[in-house]
Length: 214
Picture (cartoon, rainbow, N blue to C red):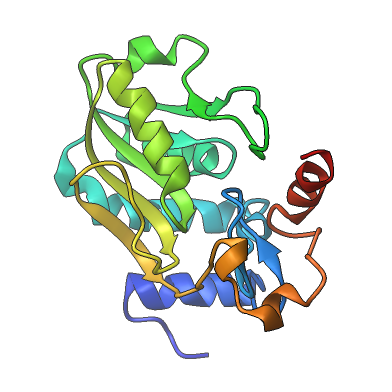
C-alpha cells in the first residue's frame, strides 16, 4: 500500500478502505435531490480511531480561523464537532432538527439544551462530515447567528463538489473533494430515476414515505 502524502490522499484512503464511497445506484439526499452516488459516512463513525484522525486533520486545516467554539449539525456533524473540539481543546456543541412540516423530510436545524448561550458572542467554526448542497451547514449558520455567534468558517471531511451555499461568504475548508452530482427530481437523468430508490443509504426511505403522504 502506498503511504498517503497529503490529507486529501489519506482521507480518500480512509473512505475507500471503509467502503464508504458508493456509486452506480439511486440515492436521495435530505433536501430531496437525486443522484447515483453517495458517501456513507456511517461506515466511518463506529471506528473512533478513524474519526479521531480525520478530525485532527480537519482541525489542522481550519485552526488558522481562530474559533472559540465548534458547532455542527446532528447527527454526523455532532460527531465531527465533538472530536474536532477535542483536538482543538475547545468546547463543542451541535444543532438538531426541529419537527418536520409538510413535505419536509426533516425540520430546520435549531439550537437546544442551552447551546445558544455557549455560542453567544463567540467565534464559531461550523463543521460537518460530508457537504453536498450546504443545506445543513446553512441552517446551522442561521441558528448560530440568531444566537449571537459569529461564524468564522466551515470545514468538513468531504465536499461533494456541488458548489454548496453555506449561507455566507466565509472560508470553506475540506479534506477531500469527491464530486457526486445530484439534481432535483425534475432535472435528474432518467437512467438514474429508473432505478429503485436505495432505502438502506441516504434518505430514500424518508423520501418515499413523504411522497406517499404528500
